[in-house]
Length: 229
Length: 229
DNA sequence: GCTCTCAAAATATGATCAAATTATGCGCTG
DNA sequence: CAGCGCATAATTTGATCATATTTTGAGAGC
Image 1: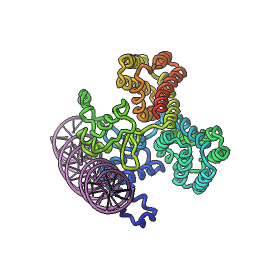
Image 2: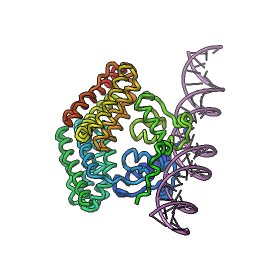
Image 3: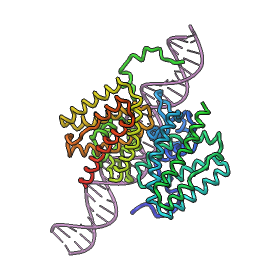
Image 4: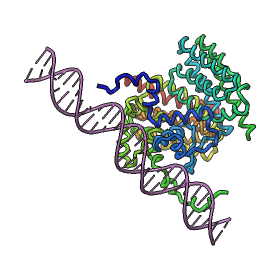
């Protein structure tokens, strides 16, 4: 007989309880990196996280290793960990990779996605518009990520989606830095074009719209980096 | 100012001794996966590695976590870890990603590489030919990886090279499985074409040669998978 | 400016807890 | 009486923590 009487299953927080500590730490740090709570160059210490998050040392170490493998953190030769600082050539490489991977994902998603799921994407895009209108930088970053991530899931190509997520972790901190300087007004979104292509199940057009979205976003980062140096 | 006075740099064995255990475990497991000592579907246990490698539990956990993030291992919902088994659609996605990333790397490498470094690549390719002639499967896998990896380093685009390495970790075990069944005789290599393009610093031709090499290798895996099922 | 000393951080180990799989044994059915 | 199924016990495995050891960085003193 199982010990669960079915009561605790009703709690929505069930997920967070069963989740291992190292996973929770990973997700938390990941969000902080994606949504710009950690700035490029910022140093990270294992001890500091142990104290701040009030968990043991082993889970923190595992989460850090994962993020280093993701490219979201760098492990310097001094055994010091920090958020990486992108060079111009790095951004240029990310642009190429994002165009290759994410346009393909958009193409495949346009073919596979159901009309019902497109509505969910539209809802996310609405919240994105609202965040832009309110100048809510964090909201912009969260919903923009949600839109792309939800879309890529419908491509049903987990290996490519994984590569895309890895790339987002790399430019997340820099994107936040740029948005903080320029604000959200100067960030037009091409998502409407993508949504239109999805409704028509036109992979080619979806890929083209995605390319414009990617290039536009990355050019902002590029400009921010050049004027910062 | 720098603390180096130039004296301690003279010790060559300094690097290997100071390497942390978790790094050593990671490198070792990584090699086992890339060069086919672990078969697709093979279960991995943390405790087993602790006993086999005679290290503590934390370093093993960190190495495992990194490899899971790399896609080289999978963490099933039963809390069991194993080498992933590729589906046809996975191989198809890897082909697309490899073509995008590695052709670009070959293109860039052709432009940047010095004549002296091409000689090193030729030497690796010679050892590769010898391994093929001798039917040395592991030697084939090692030198084939070395060739590509060394080439990609000259592209001076670490982010793209990192993506490529991640893909190699995914198909390594399956490639070994195929080679074990078909032998090395049926594996012609297109590296000679690549080398010729490098000498001419012709990026376009190098990318085309690389595409043939990638497609040829991945088709072998695809055939192996279809006939296995 | 250089070296020595000390504090802080990272590394590594072993013990302990929890969960899951496998093994065991009892009762039931044919 | 033999074979099957289910419940429980035992073993294995993963997760976490507290602690000891090693390494790095910084500051005092010469």
